[in-house]
Amino acid sequence: MKPWWLFLTSVALIGLTGCRQSQEPKPTTSQSEQTSTQTARPSTIKFSLEQAWHQFTVQFPEAHVTSLELAREANGYRYQFEGQDTQHEVELVLDATTGKILAHHQEALADDEHEEAISRSGLVTRQRASKVAVAQVGSGSATAWQLDHDDGRVIWEVTVHTGQAKHEVVIDAYSAEVLSAEIDD
Image 1 (cartoon, rainbow, N blue to C red):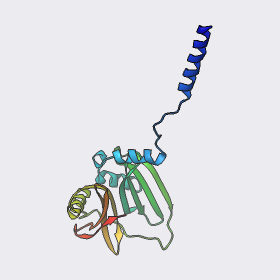
Image 2 (image 1 turned 90 degrees about the horizontal axis):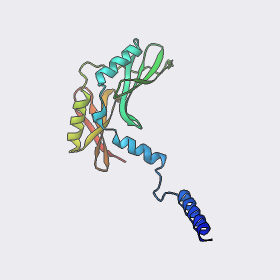
Image 3 (image 1 turned 45 degrees about the vertical axis):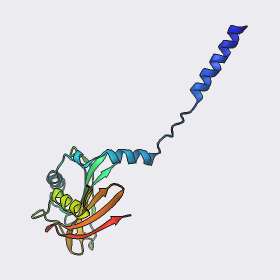
Image 4 (image 1 turned 90 degrees about the vertical axis):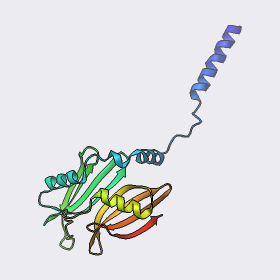
């Protein structure tokens, strides 16, 4: 009689152990995205801005760049170019590690949507914009860059992280003059 009772007790314990849920909380999607986003570092950017810009001109030979962004996404850094030709607005997204085209899009341009081109001639490099932005903040690491038009100027908007604070530094894209700096909420 005892062996049968031991057998049933063992089966019950094994069943309970197998059904027991882990006490560790499972990460939510946003926690998982945060973790992967936090692990992507600027050092993973292997495809240079010059190479990415060239890829834009190959993909859209008649278009000019009107803005670009280099920022972390869930799987690493991505370049996002926006531009126009005489009849279309275009977008190109590239993996900043491999240069692989992740997305491209073209649609008809409305008559009132024409934007000025950003000239590469005399443009402050991303690396120089980063150094200027970090110096303005006093410490930290540049983690995102946006090249765009603002009040008739072409600007670099550089995101600098210092511990828990995030700073946005706006720099003239041709002179490297700091135009503004603020803590981003």
